[in-house]
Image (cartoon, rainbow, N blue to C red; front, side, top):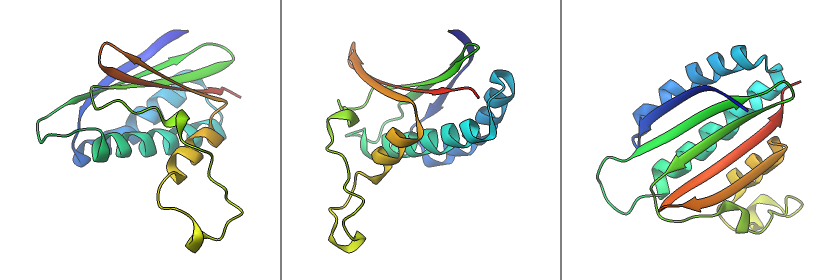
Length: 138
């Protein structure tokens, strides 16, 4: 995998505005299909929104690192944060056949990320969460 770009943003909702430009640049460099670009855009916005909203127990500024990587067949986005430990892959799958009003609150964002990507991996390293989302380029 080749690193295409690396960015840092603060854990503030206003920082989210930059993601669209980063995805556009990444999509062009990686020659992503429109479907892959859309999937990365939605998955990254969903995940970063959750990190900003739920990962931190204090009001201090924290940096979230985003790395975009690619090779000829696939693209990868890694999101690294220093929030409290949270492995989204341990969450049970959402039963989308249950009517919305009968479902438990939460979990649909993780469900969406899992289904838009070819693979989603999580690891905890040196007090940091690292979520890796991978999808075929074409």
